[in-house]
Length: 330
Image 1 (cartoon, rainbow, N blue to C red):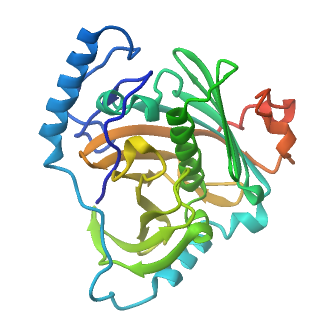
Image 2 (tube, rainbow, N blue to C red):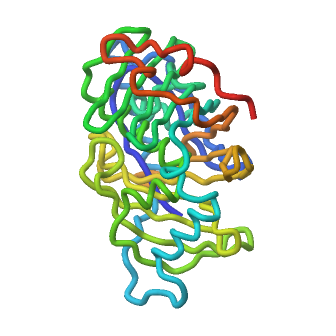
């Protein structure tokens, strides 16, 4: 399998783990203060805990795959990706204008400690998200213990507010752009990869839970978030051709340079004539190997007729009533 982020520094969050396959939760369980601020003593203690934990877990980290000397026989990487798009219900970029989706999730305790800015656990517990596929726009409204965070991400733009107050913090903007792009990938899957991916090649197949996974390696240009490029490995079921995992680098945020992570997709369901994953488990794979995040799809509907203007502006993140209506429960 594969890898993700590195310790960052900042304002919010706590958590990571490794053990229960049904939840992805790690056996290691550590907690951090709800707010990462205040006093030299607290900062020193936190640094010591993170350093000790990082050293303990670093030996488990994986390397990101590289192109093989010999390509496996059978269909090409591009053919496998094309079959995965068809297995999911065809190319959504040609058949769907907009998507409304609702998620609910839980962060691992260790990942929040190591990556408080990226996880932003005080503001990211559940979310309503809206995607305009053809325009590559995603708007997110996150709710957490400390309040509401909004993100508006489009081509060449990223706007973030906390409880209505715009953020200009570079780390916040970088990490939020990375998360927004990644959630488009996780939802749309192979079609998203097909739009951004280049130089696809096959890797050796893997057998997991007695199921063969066809693995293809590609380069994303642009990358995820504000990076120029990232690398990705798609794990595709050899029988159903549904996407089962994506393993990706995280070059779009300074706090995760050189890191990689994977997300595994479970419980596909047919909704609106397409196959959608409804449970997701993310693991950091490098520089440490730990559970990061488990979340579920709670609602989804398509083609409300949303426009860019329905999703707010930099100055006012308020959604229109059409956009604000909760995604249909599933």
